[in-house]
Image 1: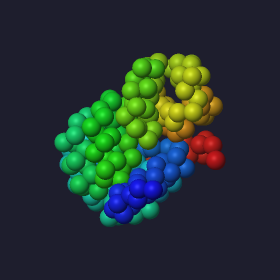
Image 2: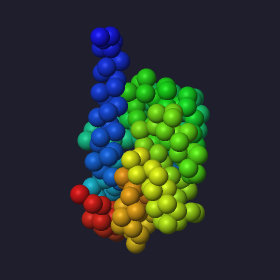
Image 3: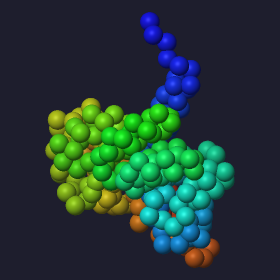
Image 4: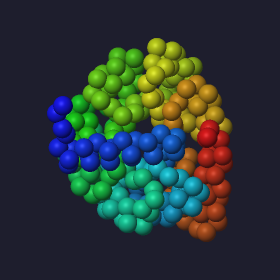
Length: 221
């Protein structure tokens, strides 16, 4: 029997572990902000509210620095990078410490590189054809995006033939319908603007923490 190189084996274990943390959390908070200085207070609120997995998008200013800082401050939280549209962004994000990558599209080279580094990928797809393409790429999860534009009934229809595929809707998930997405078969959900707008005061922070908890209370155990 061919033995795996120990380094490759370690990377596979690392990737599987991170993927299991995402699967267990069932919830990814998505940070996309206009100013770098807005990021840290938002992450503080997310973590205080119970978030275990979050991504900082690549179109957020200084997102690589934000990932690096978050890794240092919150070692028990899985920190990823989003809006990874090409291989260069994937390399930079992983070098900065991203523990998972999220894409809006289907790029095989991103998955291949990330897996070599022991990093799971949530690969973007929307149509049945996209989903099969993402699956063929080896995606760890398939991010159905923009899910809100198509609606929950569309997502249910996707789960018919793809019941054994880990589909995660992003876009259109809110505190009023999050349970409906899970009931439709979502392995997890991604939520952005409703949870990750900038906070400017202590009152803002308290309200945001309570809002996070309201979401997480509806995530199935």
